[in-house]
Image 1 (tube, rainbow, N blue to C red):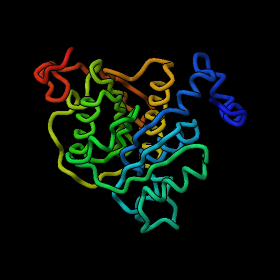
Image 2: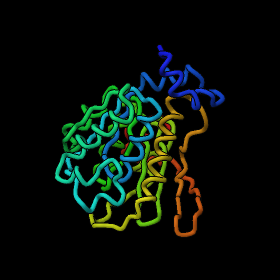
Image 3: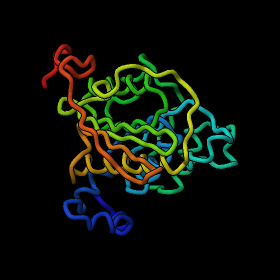
Image 4: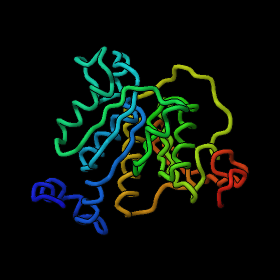
Length: 248
């Protein structure tokens, strides 16, 4: 049940057509995994916390470094050397003391990924490497959990929402695995994409709007434009295709 304080705090979003108090109650009961608390994870987590999502599980094994601070806005000078998830949890609970934040300082791997996501409503992909994204993509499909992909490079960002059994997945989109390398990022780029990911998560939980499924949204900050590419679900996809016994 929403408290009088909830109704006042979230008044402006409750006013959105189709959202209402029922939508806010859904957010209050929702549980979201955010894999990564860096450039993408910071804005995603901030706006999901501000919106009143009941439980946020933040997963990241890294510690805060000085070079993170141009884009990872949950972390400040005083946090250098600290666990990112502890730093993130501290700020998020200060932002909204009514929510629960779970800080998981672990590396996601094929042995623990299922336990990391089981029982959650949405997974936010705020990672910086494709192999771990694929692990999460497969876990999301296996557990029937919507998965919201985001990626950035320089002033370009990408986002796509995956609904298991209904839409193309990350493996349908990406085939090979590029070499791991240090890449450029302007801090505003993950801010844009992270906010899109948070918006998609809120839409899925409350049931409003149209999700970003079977579409890759590309943000071009150099020319300040958005474009879309259609992504088709592949019958032979090793994660969601019919060869895995799944329905198309």
